Length: 564
Image (cartoon, rainbow, N blue to C red; front, side, top):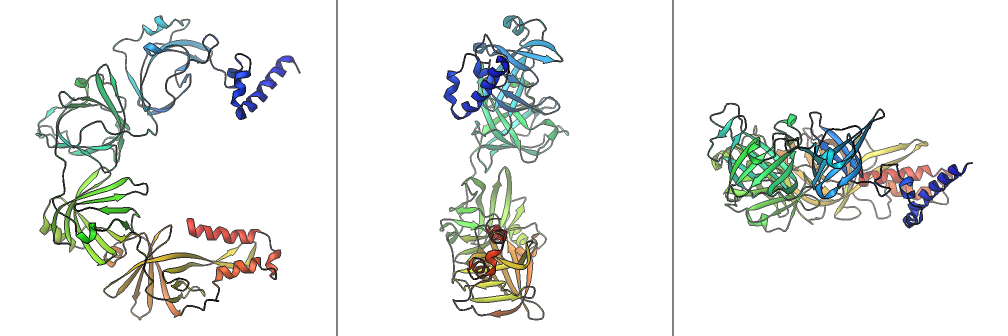
């Protein structure tokens, strides 16, 4: 082995050792740390010339590409070899088919989520920074890069507001400020509601929703950038927009598409909005005291936490963020309400009927409305053809004693389908998967049982509804008698547990014909799974000689029912 080869072997082992002891890099010979990593151009033997931002960025050039910037590498441009950081100039070396050229890039890292840059021509046999950077002129295109998966920021505009607008190709829209800028229920987002221009048949009434991702100042001009969310009004225009805000004239300019090329000044914007702050819509009525007097409720359809104040209704995600915000606009007693509902950036007027089924359960039916009209609302609730959405709320923390105690069997399994209140008066076991055969021994079977707590029971007409829950779902059990007077049990997951909702539910139900019932067994009677597990670990059992795969399979199916 040559001395040169030995040197590189030492470097390789040094690289492995450095991964566990980074301080070793300080002890390596000059230039060794660069050799341990990937080879990159350096300036005067020092550390590589690095760009001030790195990551993957979206670039709109008609093909909507993703570009990578990492340390001293700028994808499609080349490696940085020289920089004047004070003026944001970077000289990059581009190599293609052994052909080398250099160009100057004006690299403006305005925000961690947004980069803007200009570039000069790529010149062979020229590396002088001043010479190359003089090729960037004031009218050179200003390109914009947006970080993929950006972390949102608070939107830097006053909300809500009304606005009138002008379009670069249509002129001023005279709609007297009927268009609106409104906040969404989700933080860091806003909605632009454009009302069509009477004098322009090309304009259309439509909504656009955005999530704010960056803001910055450049030469006394204030910019911000946003990502399109929800349904795109014009998908071909890309995923991002740039905005200029002039607080002195109450104007906002918006780019035509994700390239933001024309947005060098507000007057060059594709859309110019003149806005006027508007009062925030406040509740004009209250929800029932028995509803807002409870600290919090749980939705059995979305599993969200619901908090109701006097006139406001919030639905929170599992991390405590607002998903839906509703305010009371008009009510008729404690049953009928008209609300304004915001779900993300979608805003609608809803006719809501709230029924208190017992102290811990309320049912809700909603139908969209075009106008605020209580008489129309009541008619809608009686119209089975209306486009309803349903929900059931149960008071948080409510656990009740199960309504019955005993075992229920159905015709396809010799084991009890449902064991109610046998081991605990507030718990039940559901064995909806009767048996599983293991591949190593087809003779061995095990039932998969889910344990749930009883939350509440409601009676509507001739039907009884039992609401239970586990860590993974809300369970709705509907008990009813068919035409032969046979007891039938329908099982639903995460749904509104009352007849009107189940009638139009798109969820596939599981139906069981109950063939007979029994009283709970004596305390010494083991359940099938406990008996089988004891059998496998008993010293007197021949199962002790079986491979470990069998008890592992049992544990796998047990955890599958608990967590999947």
